[in-house]
Length: 514
Image 1 (cartoon, one colour):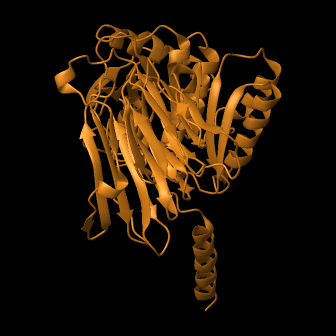
Image 2 (spheres, one colour):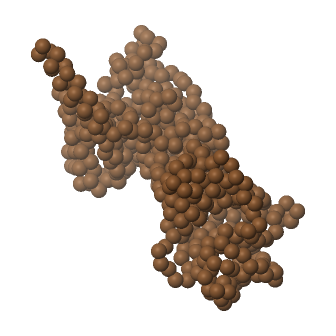
Image 3 (cartoon, one colour):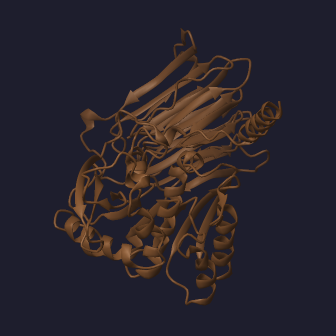
């Protein structure tokens, strides 16, 4: 009877505890997409001289974008866990997505399993490898020597790996995480970046000493990402959560560049895997050129004259500015000799003078203007409000007149509405301009409570401009919301999906370019 009560009590406690933990789910940046270039993964074996009598499998990921240029390098301990596209991390898929998005440099991935005795060609569970603790938990530079002196030279025979330590990262989980930190600590001339997932900074083989070493020894050039959960291990070697908090405190005390994603999970990769894309983006942020970020830009509650949503560059545009402007009865010249522009009428009646031809149009109408073409605009009643996007491409403009569109006006009242089961669509144009070889715009009516589509990607960047209704948008691994007047900007190759969160139809412009 006592045993039955104990088991029931244990079940209730365990079930409640597990239920209380966050259900970590990988986001869209951990999924494969048809248009994203895919890297190649190959498997090899190393019989180590650093650890005589041991052998280990390792995997090599080479991104599709690698063409002989100087590439970054990222090393993963317990490589089998990270390289598995059916596992918790799916690193090759995440690398494919982030490299295509420009969120991390072209990076070669080296995934190394722990060593085991040479009496076996392979083992069923690499986490149980006989040499794992010796290699990973020791507070020394020996494992780093194996990577630097044995594996890296072999890679460099075939690949152009950067010599810049800022382009070298090393990562691991559990004991593999403290191993990664040891490699950077004792070989800081080679590794400047560390990624630690629920790291074993406990007294297995002296790792609990690292916080005091960080505090007392000269500061090293290490940028460190950390992740752990409050339900991590607590055993004879120490408390993992508290050990990671001690590491954080030491890094903070010595002014290291670090971030710590804190969760409520246990000693597993569920939390770490779900946020891996954001983690990698942070770790490599100093090695990529950032432009206008994906996200939502809110329409101002009050403004006078002109309000700029953003002004910067993108993958396609050397310069791009998107703004809103209030019009008056007086004519405003918008002619730009160097840049193309798109004007969208938000409110009121507007008179457009395009190359000497005047036309009155209302909300939902669109004007495209080639660089150098003459345009002026006014609102006879003073109630006009416009959006204006002005841009200059990175590439030289196409000059073949037969292949590109002239300037034009699209009057909303003349655009046919085509109804379908999810709402409906108005197709404005699909064309080519000197600065945009591909340019497409439509307006969607989306029924209440549904998604337009599941997350997908395309090389073209895109703007979604809300006209009516309330929506939310999955962008990468984030979800943002927008109201009428707000603007979503979607960078090239970023997974995205819009949902109408209201009960009635939402309406929005969507236009993209490549």
